[in-house]
Length: 183
View (cartoon, rainbow, N blue to C red):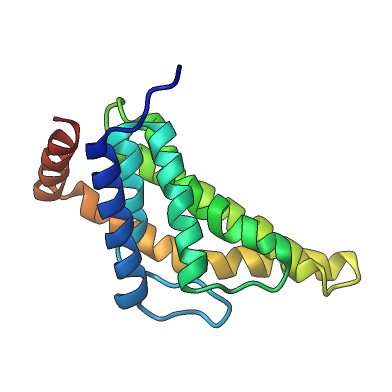
């Protein structure tokens, strides 16, 4: 028999998803023409859910966040992009749950989630860009273009977030929030 989510887990997860969604819609730094923008810590907020409650709830909540991101701002050209760029890419942020009990778990989990998101967006970019290119040289250029494109918004947000997480007052505050989420 599987353990059900508690009311507290649902409420904390819903609040985190709502806050991350508001941030991703309202506090966007330059948005790129084909999707992607620096959203100031929305990936961290989604990763917190896994850090609090583990991989099952973290992945479930992150996938829900990805679906919500599609509803709020759908952008796709190829049907496979819907799956790769939304539930799978944002769902990867739930990988943070696998690090919930390790030392520096939030930092490790956040980096794993960001790397997972980056990989899914790159796979999506490969499918999209190589569809329009006929030769191997063009495909290689298209693959690199997709990687560089995704790096332009994921890397700056990740770096800003890692710097934030390394600040002692922030790490103490996030540890306290975890205590509240688990008590």
